[in-house]
Length: 284
Ligand code: R5P
Image (spheres, rainbow, N blue to C red):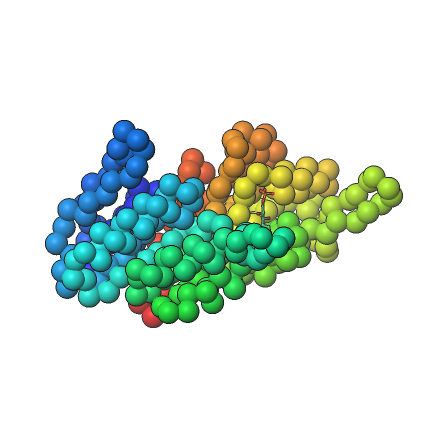
């Protein structure tokens, strides 16, 4: 068994190889002068079960993913499982206006052309899994690993920034052994809103705001501001996918005490690996 890691998922591929007791494939990667991508798998993969790991964001990593799938398919592999830890375009999962593509579906259709199985992690919209209609597709949950990590950091309250993601916060809190709540927005008058936890008092507490994605940071910053007003002692932000678009980290850092993310997108806040959860689902 081999794990093949794309250039966006080297850390995770290494961890997954350890968890699966598989070999980590040597892969040559470079860019041509015109920025086109070149990949070459420097192993004999004939007869092997392969896990290909490459995150699906930004666009250049998606192209690399397709090239790696093709390179692997040139061997006579026993099976190919494509693991896309962060499924880019997942928030474009419907037509908002006529004439638009359903971008997440377009990506799903292309990925499944060249794989036997597909896995992703905390996909923003689970309906995306159903678009893999020709291959087995699974959504791996990172919240157990986030919960273990936040327990080790001494979090006392796990907060979802809104009710829609409350189930995720609850899963993290169950593992972390603490309380969970979600923030509710209440309009006080024409231009004043208050955002408070639904039922818990955060005064003097170590609070972790947990979300699936941090992109611009707007959601986390707003939540952190309110928690400060309510007297939280320590505020940390944790997410599965640290996108941090347009230097969002520079804006979020002053608003919270610490920021943590998983290795679905490798970035300076990556502190949690999802490899054990991927390996667990792979073995089931
Ligand atoms: C929304 O549905 C998601 O769960 C996240 O809350 C959102 O993607 C975060 O985006 P941003 O960091 O841009 O506020």
